[in-house]
Picture 1 (cartoon, rainbow, N blue to C red):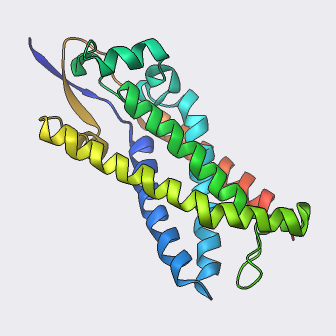
Picture 2 (picture 1 turned 90 degrees about the vertical axis):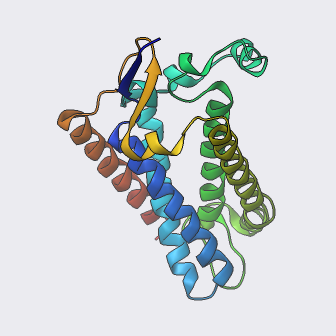
Length: 221
């Protein structure tokens, strides 16, 4: 069957992915260093929240394969994929398991950012929205942030890397398309829109999300 090279991941989605990777690494580094680095930990956390809000909006307004409707699948399709009834060529974007990992990562990171915003470690950092939850709420949020949330993120990242390595072993490159955007698929498949107009829309969405996060942080001022 002839191969067709199409745009799978638009530039905004690719930039989101790699900037989020850098931000998560920065959060880990600053979080473990503590002390004065917590100011940067907070700033990177605000950046992550901006990225997450952007991705949620882009999941409805982005290129075809970036939209939730193109990759969020029901239980029956997940089971069919696990049984090998869905061939990889019919899944140019995220496969059903990959879709679940995307949703899980978004949810876990949102919870981590939310608990950071209201948390209080009683030493080096108090979240800007801590005053809205009280002492007990802040301590509970910090406990989750340090004891549960960070390890959920580590676990999801480890699973993601293992999945990338597994697919690479099977001859499927997941990293390349997330770098240059294109993928060779068998048969016809819709391409993601990735032109100046869609990129301008993505920039407008990102700026709006950044403004919303800034306004949210100022509520605690």
